[in-house]
Length: 225
Image (cartoon, rainbow, N blue to C red; front, top):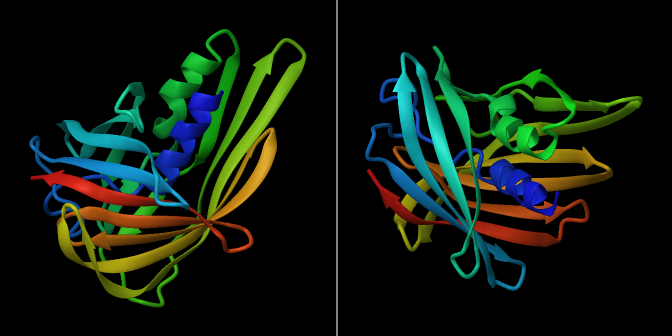
């Protein structure tokens, strides 16, 4: 469960570090050679994990993104995949596919039910715009026991614009914010702030607890198109 919780947190904070089809989204490049690395640091600036993202396949208007999670020493922890769909307005990330593989491994001998809606990101990201909420509900059944879990992304907003420099380069970014509530036994609420750039995707994100104190920072450390 500890590994799954790490994967869950990283996917949420890096959920915009993906790649969409050329005419689908101006913020995310897409071809088979696109790769990115997001490195995470704790509140003291010490490296904790890194995630490598690669476009695995493209079928019609759906791209499958493969991710690999490594610890601070570069040791492989686990991997997962999720789907992105091109829409008329931008991209739609399949929330359920993010967790399906990991949950099937975790609860392989139990009945698993996933419901919810996708994470939508339009091409028009004007400061002051409010974006649609996203949620995922999970029910795990084993005999007479039923375990309910959920993830809710709310208050998704376009905050403004800012230039950000990382080891991968300097980028003109749009700033997005949202609140994420997670219940997996224990309920937690986190505030996220993300910087995304046209043609790149996520460049930086910061995670805060409900009291506004910094928990971690995620930085684009490598990018290849």
